[in-house]
Image (cartoon, rainbow, N blue to C red; front, top):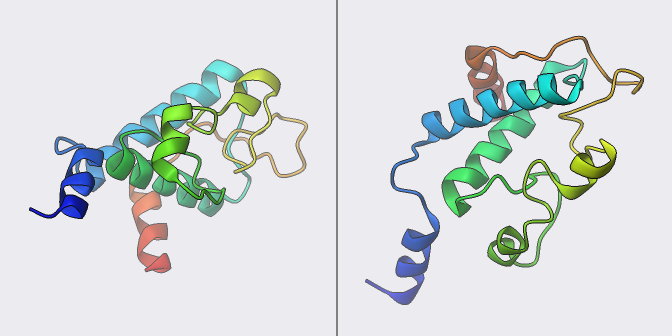
Length: 128
């Protein structure tokens, strides 16, 4: 095994497949929206893409690193924790750069705090 392959293996959670990571992040997102009194974007395809990105990072990096930002070193960002969802700006000020968790007065806030798993998968298929 090469050093690069070893690093990839260490960063991946072998118990978390793509679909289980997706279910986990969907469930987390729904629960967190309800706990914080926030809502998903009125365009649920935005919500789907963000949840998909969180799931991918959860699977690859072991943490739901914000998928809407650029990072020079994702592993270092995960360890720092600032941009792991829910990120510090969300926890402190209810500011979600990804538009996953929106306060009801936000221009793009919808009325939903739930999203269908099959819908997320359908959006994923259209993105491929």
